[in-house]
Length: 338
Image 1: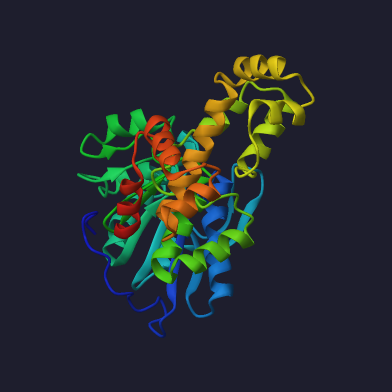
Image 2: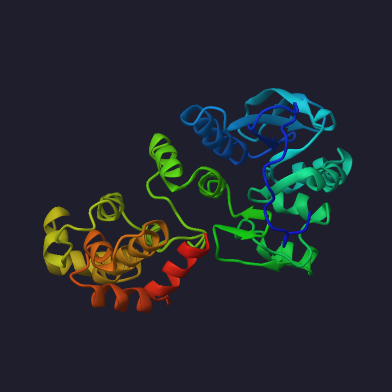
């Protein structure tokens, strides 16, 4: 499989019958639990929502029960060498360095992935699972990502790969890689959207109570999360409330009233704890929301500006350029290419 290969028609399934797509998730002893559970949940929900679309298989080097880093085990996994025939989507999870090294070099995960990729329509990794794909020789010349803390190491160990350090997931042809842990869910929803359409992906996101459907260009460390890092419980709650109420009055006076503080004290405290003024935080969150809607919908810009809390399209454009460094047209272009 080349990362620049076009997605082929869906192959025959593992059993050789029917149109159902077989999704194989590869785990190993010590696997990061969320890395495997998040995409498994998304594809399982899709199989329930649209019957006959997916069969989800859990595989591991030896099969049987596999312990996770969270202290519970995945039961009844398939031995990876028993997974024969075409695979639609092959996803390898990540884990801590020692567990991943044992899986790649002692349990033969790298060698198995190299041959399994040849019979897979598309191959993906979650978090540090990218190192397993690197060991299989699948990242050479490809744009890829991994957890923000591991990007430098991946670039060092796989100099032929073009490591994208500030993307939650990256698609390069038939190769998909995602960043840290929960971004595996964002990638899985994007994979499902490619197969079943946006409406199906949105329904599954709602079923999983996902806060927002993030695009591949979303930053690994969101400004909202960084702002919350040093904030008090009162301001953390307010920041979370802002993200769900972008069309409300989010002026300093209104936010101060909600926080039960004087406007002057609120503005000073917010800037100290969030490392940016309230108005800047609000503009950043609104700009990110607008960018997501531009990528995910065909709504006119006037509607997107209103839904994001901007008073006009011009205000939205200025905020996106100032805080994201992009224009609405770039997001729309990404939408058309998706």
